[in-house]
Length: 454
Image (cartoon, rainbow, N blue to C red; front, side):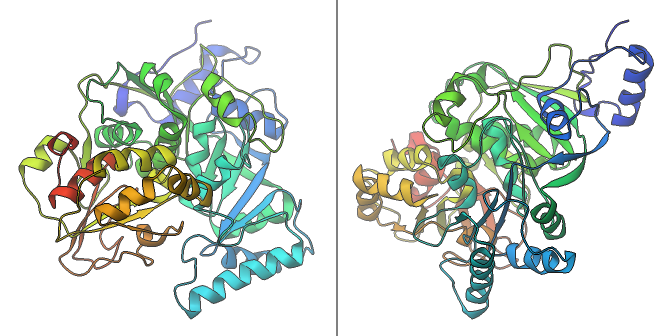
């Protein structure tokens, strides 16, 4: 009895039809291959096999909240009526959004998170000065490992799929249940297989450009409630920093999670970091996909996402030709605040000066990254160029602080969203780019290609 491989691109049939087809063609006793996402969820639900669309309850390896979502989850946790979280070693609280606190309300939120961590005697509460942006910090510290199931009250929790984990964002109520019970229900998502072929000729093309190009192709709802499984030659060659960037922005295509099957690079990354054992999962050769999207990156250029959607992408050459003047550049965030990102920006800014009409804010993703940037001279490069270097914080990404835009201002940013009002005034504009384009734009005072500066 044959198995059906669905490869109808972004217009693939609805998941319900695929599930029916799968059921009719396999027979009741035949086991069908599973995707990496299905395998991880099955293992955590104690099941031998699951299919897209199944409802299940899965054990959680890690539960995450920050200073914005944490207080809400804590209030809901109190309503459940349990005294203790399910496991003091598996709940992580990190103040990183409005931290260090920008005002009295944000200070109160951070304080509530801290008090809860103290009361619950949580092992993994990380105060300002010992932490970083959560989605940079957790992989760096080995708190998430391949094969995990992780939930976080933050949409970019999908970042950890870059390690080969199933990770997804949830609401604060679901997070409270996760803290109390150590498990949560899921509908197994359909999987979109994203195959990136080739090797980019342009040396400045990065994982950020891959994911922007994919979102530009399928749209911001093109993978709604799906697992985006990234594979192909270009993914194999991509660094771990680049893979985390791609998984981070799966939510920008509406995905439930983004995931990359672990390989030697993954193992090398987690060795020496992991605080507990890990398990490597791979998709079966006969796994069923809701859709397959292919993209050849050979001739891909750095991408620029114009306002007000991450899918509104253009090649950097087109954007540069428009000579759009800018007011601000942000290099950082949970998307592009890792070492590779800062190093790339520094190569552009070395011995250069920021345009006099532009302010540049560099935000290392964690304290360790910040310290490495100090030791290896990157911070000196940034300051001599005329940029400011911030303590790790989400800050400007969500319009919190450390870089709010005024009416009419235009920013180039390595963050993940450029919705209306995301970084400040509703009549400001955000252009999403990789760190190289952001740094080049800072020098020329307009959206610019790296080749124009280096």
